[in-house]
Image (tube, rainbow, N blue to C red; front, side):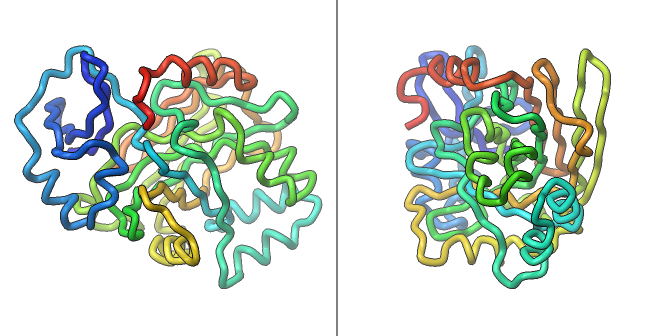
Length: 297
């Protein structure tokens, strides 16, 4: 299985490569945003003609976003998501209408510099009583809106804040530590059917599983191309973007995240994402600040 990766080498240089069975070969591009300013066909050619293998000693995988890239997300794209939103909300009909509407719900999630990745902590808000992980298939998109690859996304959310009033959605969704993206990007040309992928999530607490759920992207209510089309309407993404396609695995209202929990997500043919949970943004800020200078630009 091959993955596109953004990595820091032993000397601290940030590079883009193709990782296949532990073998890392660099691509002839300066950054992920440089890669995504090219057509999908050229991206495939660059991957298939990657350079000679380089040592992985001292290398560190980074979030697959840089430059002016953004993460956006779609909501209420699965029936279970619509049901969960109605359970938590004082205005249930809002979510029923979104699920059936022609226009999808799309919202901004994170700039590139605030995204965390495998092994880095996700955060639960200090002013929220109920917070949950939301496992989602993410689309890595070129500047022209072509799908270049797939990633695992955790759209961490405050159910209590959003449930209080749908207009509080930005506060429930957009904060430091709320967006985790797998470091490994599965090339689109290696995934024949993105709408037939199994998805699993579990929450570990003190080493014990307190929640496990599974779904399939076959249950998506909207085609990925449709979501991308709406996101690109009257909008510009000169360095590409990640679009998270929504969730169908939602813990019950009685099971919110706690500090010390670990969230594990797997998507067939794409990859996995493992995140420890912390309370508040302080630890996440420390991790973001500790990244090597220039690694996120």
